Image: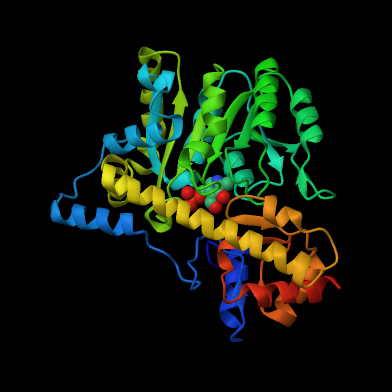
Length: 402
Ligand code: PLP
């Protein structure tokens, strides 16, 4: 008998399943709208010019391959914090932000979850929005936190359920942790407005909740890294202490390089040092220290003014292409095809994803009849659409809902 004969088969990953079905489909019209990675106008993966140039500089510098420190490349962590919190951030200027380089955004959330489970004194419960990025739930559970939910998405309006959100946060136990998507909410594409963020900040203060921001898409939502950091910077300006996960997967297209950062704002440099020491104690027995190459790429871009400018332009280019696709899809559905239903949410949603409002049956029909693949909750990656396939997509949606 094998040692592993009693190991049960786990369920397949829903997103990877879509990619497999897509690959098996040989129809020339097939479209994959499941993946959360940017695609260019030709439907191809996109390596940013700023990244290519940074890699050339790194190669020319003939750097060694020594280990990084436990918390990563110090230039990178410092520049990542500057990008998120802003150059004039008070805790940053007080040397009071503890930052560690992480295995992209997922690793940042996991280090953060573990730190909170170990050291956050008031609660072991984290509230996440319904719906949220699917991985948040097992990730925080595996970190040792209990996961609960607050209302976020209103199926009827295909928009934010702001009343439900406020009520649920107001009714959360004092001191609970609350996970907030900083911008470009995944999977819905629905973000609070700036004025709604201010109300959320007031409730968080009143109920003494602890805000943990997941910022996986800085720059990707609006095209401006500053504008997309609004919620994070506003909360800090209001005196909240926050936890923050950052990813450079989307905004630098560094998906497989796994570049991210986790940070906590603290009250002083002395406190920051104590927190830093505990972050090291979490990282060291888990993976010792983070990988080198991706951090060098991101740091080269963030610290070279010319590359930084080129990168900002490319982030805006990616965001604008997605915004154009939203506009075009809206026009096709509501004007050209007069598709039954209200489609303005396609335009008002933000970031990589759109919750179309298509139901499971309609998604199935799209896959089986039209070779169009998406998650069964009706989420599409806007980045999978382009000038060549968007009309076919809209026509197929039109047929599926009639
Ligand atoms: N958080 C959210 C909301 C995401 O959508 C993603 C990626 O899809 C991540 C975190 C983590 O991504 P990565 O680990 O590739 O940085």
